[in-house]
Image 1 (cartoon, rainbow, N blue to C red):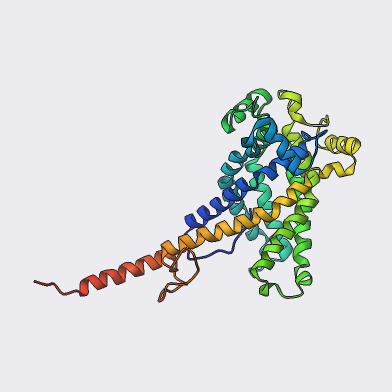
Image 2 (cartoon, helix red, strand yellow; image 1 turned 90 degrees about the horizontal axis):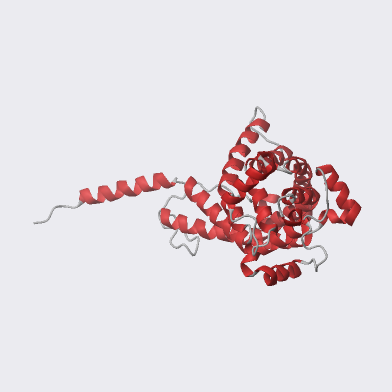
Length: 341
């Protein structure tokens, strides 16, 4: 999930709520593209028209319109624990990489973010595997009825370690992800021909999309292998719909290249790249709108539809401080009133 600059005028709960709503809405509105990406990675769409539109149309006709959002509920449910773990891990890694003077290099900051994302993914990995299983199954003849049923069924049939099948690819894929992030951030000033502290809002949004496109393209082969390993199961029809047979991660790489060529590792990349701009656009706009509502409730702005500040309100005050100040003046005003007969 993208990160925002910390605003001291919001409480911790409000920031978490805004981020959660923004993430859930962006996931939900781009879920059909996520479905097209996963189906192409696993190989379910092999032998059919393989573009995102063709994949979505085929799933719609075969299973109904609701099928375009298979696995989205699980993806939204894992947002909260994943975000909490990632934030806690990021703070720990930043402390580890900070020198004695309190400084942290750009590479160390990116590495801390990548490691935090990797930790959160590992901790919540079973939900990611279940999301993949729900996406590749046929809704008309489901093997799993939901998150809890899928967890119980996989645990009973395949054992606990099956819930972490492909998790090693998360660790390996973090390396090209970090390298791609560093590559983009090192060249931002050259791309825009100006200092970073003067970037406009559209420029920052474009930077986020560019970084996501580069990092996801570089790490996509590992993501493809991971999806195949997540979906593969002898207890599912057609072994989970996987288009190649393999015995492990290395063998999966080998079989994909042997059957489809090196570009087979990037199946589904088009749908994944198409998802980036609307995903982050919806996320940032939703977060900002929810933030304005919270700022209005806290008393900092005049309307939730704008950022126009409330006259006479010190914007540097914390929410609790502002509430206490309002209570103080309100109590003082009441005491100053003279009793009337």
